Amino acid sequence: MSEAAAFVRNTALVVDDESTGRLILKAQLEREQYRVVSAANGAEALEQFEREEPDIVFLDVILPDFYGYEVARAMKLRAGERFVPIFFLTGLSEEEALAECVAAGGDDFLSKPINFSILKSKIAAIERIRDLYERARQQRTELADLHARMQYEQQIAERILSGAVMARNVASPPIQCWLQSASTFNGDLFISAYTPAGGLSVLMGDFTGHGLAAALGALPAAETFRTMTAKGCSLTEVLAEINLSLHRILPTGMFLAAAALRIEADLQTAMVWNSGLPDIHLCRSGASRRKISSQHPPLAALSSFIPGCEPELVLLAPGDVFLLCSDGVTEACNAEGKPFGEERLEGILDACAAADTFSCVRATLTDFVAGTEQQDDISLVAIPCEPTLFAGARIDDDGRLAEDLPASAWNWSLRLEGANLARIDPVPLVMGQLSAFGISSHHRQQLYVVVSELFSNAIEHGVLALNAALKCSAEGFMEYYLLRQQRLDELAEGFVELRLDYRKEDGRGVIRVWVEDSGRGFCHGECERCDVPQILREANQSIAEPPSLSLEHCGRGMKLLRSLCRKVRYMGMGNCAEAEYVL
Image (tube, rainbow, N blue to C red; front, side, top):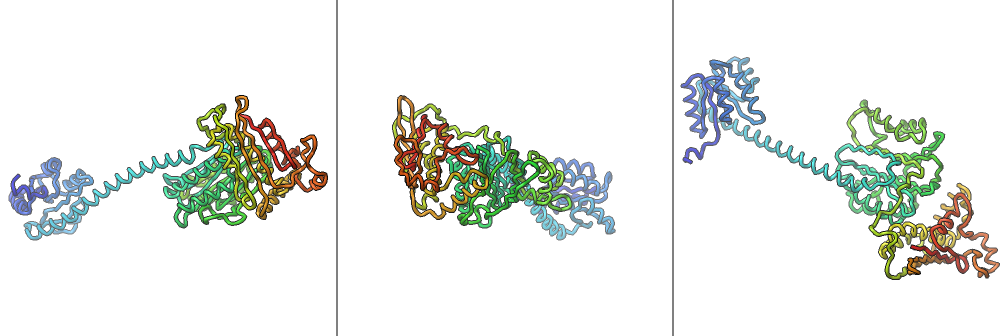
């Protein structure tokens, strides 16, 4: 390559029907290190433009076959996104002619005869513009590529998050769920899981804002919810742990408005919690309806729960349907900017049957927004209180057969005293130990019922001395659990001891669950010679009867225990219970 060629920086196209003018301009441009190609008419100019792809064009206004305006338009069209500056060579001075040059795509003018100093300065200026344009074009291309890659990665991330959060949900159908995001990522979440006792727990939440930042908080919330629910933790414990974990990881000002339910498998009761979401509606037959309003701060707003921050106990009736929604429903706006509103929502619920609430609200909301751009994530969930909710209830399969028996004997014990009885739930600890000892998921599910029932009886009827007869009516049932919480809060002494022992007997595995409490006991009458003094029997009028009452809201626990275990018996003064479960 010659030294002259090394300095050639761009290609210039000179279009002029006068050969003298072409030669003079060519000489001047070559002095500026341009490689110059020439054309004498419009047709030749377009051919050269296609073939050479020049970086700058000098175009005479008057050509033998075309006007320069027409040639300039054709060149701009063929250049596409590439910026090719066009200088018109003209002797015209009329304003209309000059305006037409600009309209045709011209970038500047050079008057004939051409002044070399002016040419040089105008080339320098237009090159700066061209360089800026090219840099901007490259940046637009890079941004477009980056945006496309980001969209692809977000779609992949959304699939992963949705799979981790939503794909493991249970009871769908009959649960009806509509989650519609305002962006790629959904800041709302809905999680459902079965408890070891066969009940159903659900959590619906709305993170502050929407998009990726909101969606990322759903993963730890879902994992905590499912893990602790499977271990048998109470709804309060689950929510407290989610609150703590989110408070640690979310930035200041970001929180989770949430609603949670735990519906027991007997469809008699549900625990309900609302912290920052619109009212939860319990729709009942006969168009009656009950609202559970938000009574608690959103999750992650505080590091710990405020005192008395407990779920509400609700008695259920046949045909009940829970309807939950995020504020994306009530705040959705129509084309006129009017919100859907809580009043409109309640009007729909009052007008339709409980079983039709989900379809009625969704259809009305869809018509109301009528295709307007969505500003927030929309979530709507209906949960009918019916037996089909629990058709698939089970603990996740851990790969062991129910018939597989641990090879070695083992025993495990725990004693809780005083305030720890109110603070610590031993049942999840027992579930963890059973899993560590190799007890299959099928048997853990049965043993969860056995251990939790015996421990509850020891706490309620033993240490707290609650009378089961209170649960004879719906009103008494509510009074019973209010009194239970009050006495737990005031508890300063007393104990419950829990022991599990595993042995093989005649080729079968047997787990004995033994629970003792510090209560005064009761006259259980299951021995030939009762050890309980008569004075204690008389005092027993204020102490719980053995949990075998055939009443609507009590007494079911003992029947369930006897159906699951080979033997259930009370010993001593009635404050010691033993159950034998055969694997």
